[in-house]
Image (cartoon, rainbow, N blue to C red):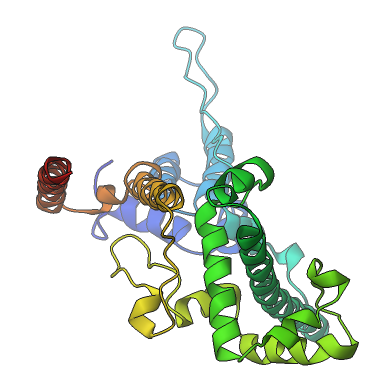
Length: 314
């Protein structure tokens, strides 16, 4: 498509048609016949717009109406209606979905209520993660050495070892920070096998400490605060040892291997998302892409040297 030029009369008129909002375009098209060259140029411009699907359909209709009848000897190609669905912003900004000024407070109240409910659920999720971590630790110490990981693989679905390790690490931080004692643990309900957020009686003190420990934080907030969760690809790796909360890295070789497998898998999945699914390199210049590719080659070579060195020292 040729570049838009304001000095071109057709471009200028087509731009006035397509660069306004939907209502402006609708009014312009309903105001009378338009030069078909202007309509076709406006259709080209709309096709390059991020939210141009609706405008394309309107212009396609206007072009069909403005086109002369097809000659029997020279059949004209039919204009292909756009099959691209409306983008999210087009759908959500539709006037039928907006509220009047009088009704707006009701919609605003609903939004605030939903946000408050999300925060409540996030705090509850953080508290339940601590409880899950405490229970998992007790399961681990109740099993014989080497049985915990096979038990997790067999019975725990949808939560990997690394996530369970986060929960157990957070539970250890809670016990240390809140000064949880053996009597506190023994006061828990259900013969210490079932933990509930709505416990009463002697266990109320334990849950008061848990509520104070969580505060207004979400699970991710707590994991980040106490250095238990490593930052995403490209960020500096941190551990609990960096924050003085203790190192929760497993010492059992099989558990450590499972943790490292999950870390590498997560790293690869993040790379796949960035490089393949989102194709972020499409936004870079050719020089940037070349530099990044060279960096990947260098990383691969350094990894192979490090792996070879590690195998040689075993």
